[in-house]
Image (cartoon, rainbow, N blue to C red; front, top):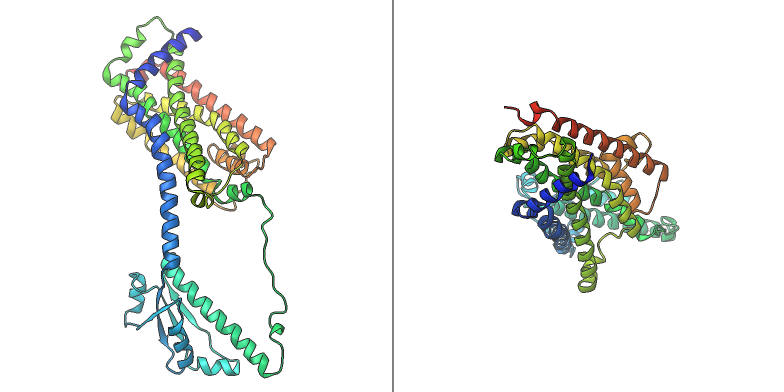
Length: 397
């Protein structure tokens, strides 16, 4: 193995890649500009939509209630609800998002309030729909307040203090630092984005340096040079790894600068975003280095079997699911890092990064994750070198 030959091949591939506009788009433009814009754009839109829903007065309908005029009148006078006339197809209207929720007042409800034997009230809503949940929340708040007033009134009728039903108050106070809160709330999203960028950043160089060269007919010319096959594949691999790391580092830097600029220009907006441990962010980048090697080697090996760029795309595209699915699982609540999950590729990185962003460092498991990922990456790289030396793989027809 000659490092001089390896870096000669690497410099040659790097110069060719920098002349390719598609490579610049996938490795530099999208990670540096598009991903931060999408991330903050989606966050801003989500905040705006949520604020709009909170300001909106939901439309609800009352089912029954003919013998409960007082409760119906109070509902209609509520400034937080808009009470409409219940149509015959009120269920379909809720499903079509024309009505946000409905409440059924059973017969004898108002009379039951005075005797303490009021039948239950039923709410109807569209589960999972934001505005319908808003209407449901307002209805629940209204009837919860009605219940408390009824209790206080009945206690007063018997000469008992109102505090008998609620003898004490309680409240919660957060004791975790902002970094831990941010890591717990959104710590799974950051490694998801980083892993996705590592994969997509390596994808185009891997396809172009293998199947692309086969399609252009330049692979044979390179193989005729007085450079060992192993040196050629390592030089090409370094170029694929450069694309993966460039996408990850540029995106992380761009998002960090965007946060810094946003904190200065729009402190109110940035203050609503989760905060992460700065050391944890550096730890995330360090821990994803071996997984970038793994992605680069796997993509290079898979694309090597293709005869054309289009065929290589069909081979590589399903691998995206293998990357995305474990990363998404790592975002789910209740899944914590342990020794067994520390050996699962991609999922271990996602879980460990979430912990580090919270400021929690499980050193034994981090060492196990780093070591196992390095081992997987070494195996994938060795397989790539072996496949590159096989004539039936390079020149398959």
